[in-house]
Image (cartoon, rainbow, N blue to C red; front, side):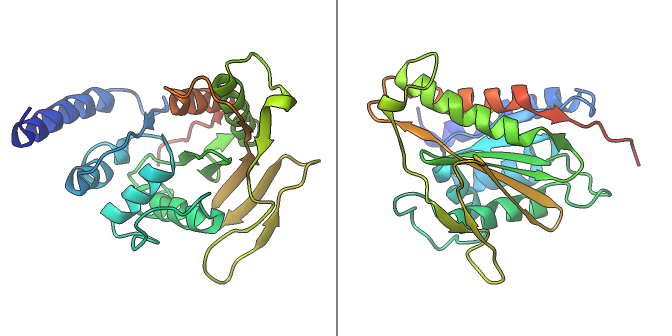
Length: 236
């Protein structure tokens, strides 16, 4: 199909979806799972004009996170691609920027976005604006667990079939001031705060020989939402 024809069709579908979403009561949270794309203008329309302001939560992987920052000229947009396991500090910077630019950091903001579920092979992060979501430690662990079991095609994690690839030491930001953080086996979730945004990170037990990867991002985000508690806000 010709691209010049395809883009208007996609944007018409987007407008229809936005119209339908807008009719949902605001006390019902809406989650958007991003997918890979290459059109920066289209990504910007999603971020600024159409979808992002009316959803409560988004899920995305490292490629989608970096492309979103590149499209919006956000932190670390000069990077062409991640080298190996994404640096936690850089990921944290971009997640905070998304919530500051397109989320409800300020209670008076008209945006609804207050939660981002970031998932990459080695670790997951849940970034939430304080006061809107509860039980996020359990939520991020649940997403990591389903990443292991579904990839291995198992009902429960088998220690002999998984390995740890997450960094044991990392920072809360790529720039100063920043906090040095660690993964502690006795405390599987590492937590830090930046302003009124709280970050929950957990390692993923990576399947050595994955059998199922299609739809894994959807499964991760869905499992995390099952364990999340959405706190309804009173209108201002």
